[in-house]
Length: 203
View 1 (tube, rainbow, N blue to C red):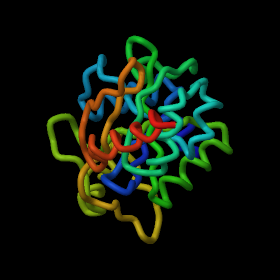
View 2 (cartoon, helix red, strand yellow):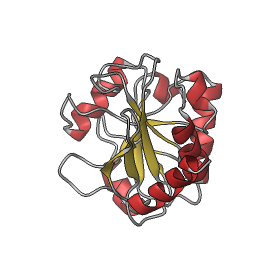
View 3 (spheres, rainbow, N blue to C red):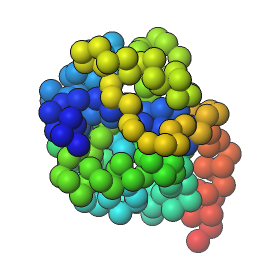
């Protein structure tokens, strides 16, 4: 945790790919992440949360449809873009203040999110572990190649069973408008989301 407090980057597994964590409230850490990834400054960064209850603590008020989607798919491979009153480091939130929130079902990611919350760090970013334009890290060996010990490179989380789940990346769903909008269809399909929203509409 001392490394995170000083602005270091942390690589950790999720149920899909390896994630890249930086303290989302630290301008130094977020800028370091952007430099390492080569990520454009106008592209926002998702945030890792430990559970749905964390959203209220971060200034998010869920509409009934959004709350149902949280209940249906979290923890799981979907990032929900939501209006947020919390202030993060520049470049985390979208220009309208919305933030993407990710609640992973991977035990290590869950434990990490809980720990940083307890220790007053973060929350951490939840972008993929790769440089922009390259394939994301899906395996421990691929993650280790990125965490090569050079100055500024990420630190690979130390755990005995360090593997990501593999498969499709998380879906990204924008819930800031009058209708949900799929920004990236991944592990959770538009049809699955429509089924849940249909249930809300029938109540």
